[in-house]
Length: 327
Image (tube, rainbow, N blue to C red; front, side):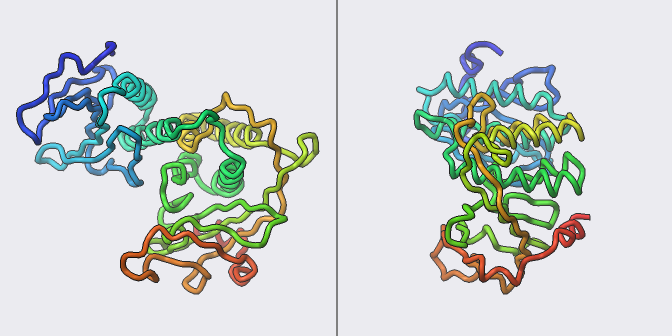
């Protein structure tokens, strides 16, 4: 890869065409540097229709991410398009990071997923602010997801399936999707009022699923030097070690998803420790207290609301129910 791979690429004459050259013939996946008719720089990953993204596409400041058709045979292209040429250098860094990460992918489907995961990582890093560390609320939410991954999915299903099911970092409405089983993970302060916050009308919507569960764990700030205390680095490392012991080939995907969530190994979270309290697993059925898209009037969207957990007690279920449907 030279310093500016788009330098010698001329824009095409037709609006529906691109001018492209392969990134690296030694990489098994079809990456191309490209230029569009409006002189914009592109990174293109050509793939089959069956490998099309299953989750929401990232949104980056100054970079458009979209899918388009390629050729008459049902082929597809995942495209990253630089909107502002002034950011060409950083866009080149983003593209190289993606290509280098995807070069290790074992399948075309994984290549597309890793491309999106790395793009989400840059989405987080480019959000602005002087401190790239996760806030305490973000730490708490990530720990809740990691605890569920560690205690339930890595224990019950194949390691690759468990890690791949973690779609929360890719901005999916649900945190985990295992086939037609979905799980939302929430962490709350045990000393606070007994409620949880729901971020959209789709988060607890069970349409399109056979089973939907809600995992809620209590996490409170703890003095650093206690037997029960742990920080985000501790949990991330523990889950990483567990994945490595089960299937080391899945580590790259775990790392990419952590990065998409905003976690960086070089960041030190030893100044913020947590203690775990009670946790419950709820099964979300039709009469579970919630707001869903089908219950909203036309034109109402992006709903955020809270649920009293005392009203959810009739829906508490045993771990065995989740294990049953996962099996």
